[in-house]
Amino acid sequence: MSNPLLQVVDLQRLSAETKRTGIKLLIDNTFATPVITKPLHLGADMVIHSVTKYLSGHSDVTAGAVVAAKAEDMERSKQIMRVYGLNLSPFESWLAARGLKTLQVRMKQHCFNALAVAEFLSRHPKVKQVWYPGLPQHPQHKLSKAQGCGMFGGMLSFRLEDDLETVNSFMKALQHIPFAPSLAGVSSSISHPLRTSHRSLNPEQQQKLGITLGVIRLSVGIEETVELLADLAQALEKMK
Image (cartoon, rainbow, N blue to C red; front, side):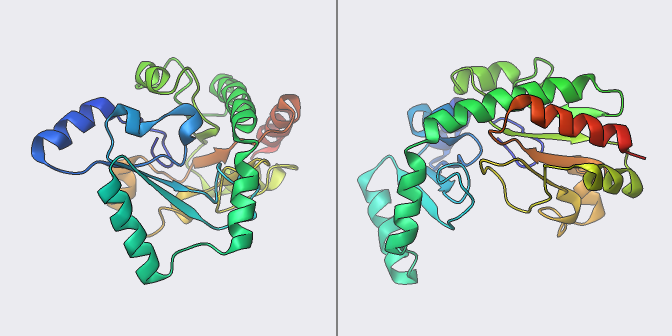
C-alpha cells in the first residue's frame, strides 16, 4: 500500500514480471504488516518493515526489519548491517518483541476502526475524496481484499477543500487526534503530506501524484470507534 494515497500493487503480477527480467522484488510491507499481506508467499524476494510503526505499535522504538526468501539474500543483508552498525540495542529489541505479542489483536482493531472512519468520511459533505482500500469504490478494492485476507489496514487519506485555512481549522478543531509525522501507533494521528512526507517534491510532481493542499493522512488507532467518529464529526463541523 502506497503512502499517502493507499494504492495497492498486484504482487503476483509484479513478481512474475521481475522474475522474467531477472530483477529482485523488494516490498515495503509496513502499512499492511504480515497480518494482512505476506509478500514472500506472493513471490517477493525480500520484505522490509518499519518496526517503528505497526510491528512495535506503541510509538516508542525506532527500528527496521528485513526478511528474505533466500538464505544468500539474508546473509548479504546481515553483512551490510554488521558493516554499518545497524543492529539494534538489547532494549530496542525487547520493545519490538514486546509489541509483536499484540500485533494480531491490534491490527484487527486498527482495520475495524479504519473502515468505520472511511465509510463515515466518504458520506460527509465536506469531504471531497477518501482513499481506503476497504471501500468498494477504491480502484484496487478486489485486489486488496484478495491479497489482504479481507483486511485493509489502519491507514487512510482524505481530501478537504484545497485551502490552507480550511485544513488548519480542521486540524486545530480535533480534540483527541494530534498532528504527528509518524504513524501506526495505538493512538490515532494525522499528517499533512504536502508539508511533511512529500514536501521535497516540486509542485508538478505533487500534482501528478494527486497530493494537493487538502489531502490529509489519518493513522487510525485502536480507540473506541464512537470516540474517533465523534472527534472527526465535531472538527468537520467547526471547519471554516
